[in-house]
Image (cartoon, rainbow, N blue to C red; front, side, top):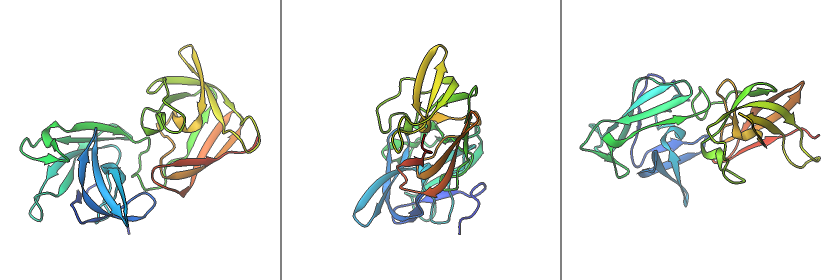
Amino acid sequence: MKRSSHDKQFRVQAGDIVTLSDLTKWKVEGFSFQHEIRVRVKRNSVIRYMAVHKVRDPNGVALIPGTHYLVIVGDSESRFALRLQNFGPCKMSHIRIQGRDKTRKIGGKVVSQIDYKKFCGSERAFDEEPETIAIEVGSQVLMRSDFAADHYYGAIEMAGKYGIVESIDKPTRPLGWASTLMVDFSGVRKQYRIFRFVDASGHMMQLGWSYRVERKNGMLTAKPIRRIDPDRVEWSDPDP
């Protein structure tokens, strides 16, 4: 049973069993650093590198958006354990991870050189059911600049920019293409699929979830309905 993570310290070390968003169990083999702290996990013969905010530790603790964490390496049980300690609040829907120790490394990176933020597009832990996405004509949206900005069909040039929704467009053929948004980015009009946007509440479609999309009276909603592979996002779209 998962426990509240707000006041608990996140801790993992090699050999621990951690949980991913699809609730599968994986064994920790080590850590790496490539723009973020990643946990190297293995299950059967499959190896994955998961961002640290995308795993739940053996005690059921996960990182929570809106929190600033301090990186600590080592404790009385293991000098190689990774600990992330609640260091105070952070901007809503963001996680900040910062280190101060100049003598230790994690994944080959000196701890004091670690200081980054991750925009989560949710106020909930990675494996909890995310918020329903709601976008209406005339509302402001943000083009994602994370994994989904260049996922599936190439990079998006408007990544990180705000725009106003001009229209919510139906698929062009039955059982074919997905709903799209026509968005005005300060005079530049672009049309993209819905998973690429952050809604006016700061929420976005989350990797690891399948969504049900509905369109009605100039409003589009995408409700999470089931868990899927942690590296994918998918949705069922109503026919034209």
